[in-house]
Image 1 (tube, rainbow, N blue to C red):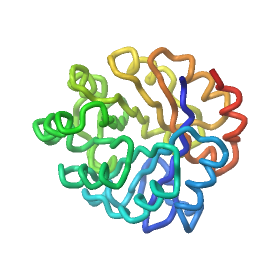
Image 2 (image 1 turned 135 degrees about the horizontal axis):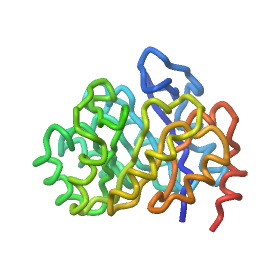
Image 3 (image 1 turned 90 degrees about the horizontal axis):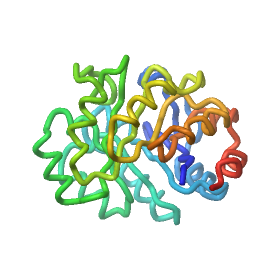
Length: 240
């Protein structure tokens, strides 16, 4: 089943969206992230994608109390990403009730620690591949790793992860439509399911993504907050 997954990005304790992942291009949509998380659940969202932007930039989760509150208030599963670079941070998140954790920087910079994390939480980890011109980035998208996104993903093909989140940074927060060609190229190169992220602007984009083999869902952020995608309509249209 293809999942439409609303994004709740937290920065400074508020629900915001960035343009192309840039910290200086920020728009606050809700003062209270818990309130909007509940709104998406009430509208039928099957899952929530929560990002700690402060954590992503600083290397350690900064908004854990808010994340805990979201998990407690919601009955749908919550996946989380942003600054998870130690086993302790990972354990804290699962203890808080998070369903899946997305890892990025640690996959590139500490592959042995990452493998240890996979062994500790089999089937619960998601590799977040954030690509700029096809090359993976790290540290909240601020550093380019020099490793092609597909090559990095293939390193995790044989590990017991849940799957991947593939983000095209140039499209993120732009409402220009996803990079379908790159999503398809990425999804066809890996053996685990892929969630696409970045650029969704209209319901038609979601329909098109749902037709790409091995794409199990899409994260929708700005399009929901700006009203160019109606969540209920999207869910109705993509019913199996």
